[in-house]
Image 1 (cartoon, rainbow, N blue to C red):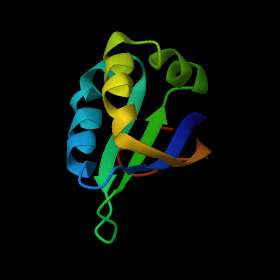
Image 2 (tube, one colour):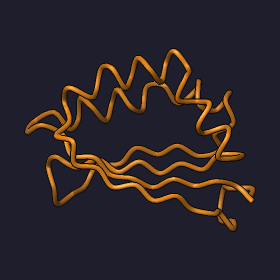
Image 3 (cartoon, one colour):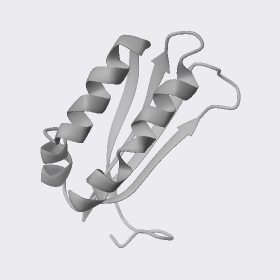
Image 4 (cartoon, helix red, strand yellow):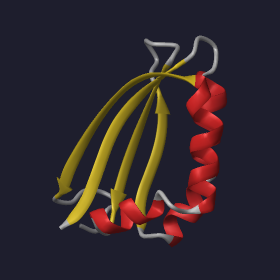
Length: 101
């Protein structure tokens, strides 16, 4: 069964779009690491909130991706622009459109 992750983060006021672009920029490196779906979204009702939806071949592939140079660079770039307010949910992906579970 595939591993899923759904999370939110809150940015410093006015930094949302900048952070969202930085997070989305490394998508190709994630594909090569076993990511099947990576979506960065912004809230239409909250100008400082970002949602990230991910589906991975496995939790191990997700965990290993956190060591990729591109991912570490994105984390280093974006962390100072965040407030520290996060939510995270780990999921077992059953299936769906565009996702081979």
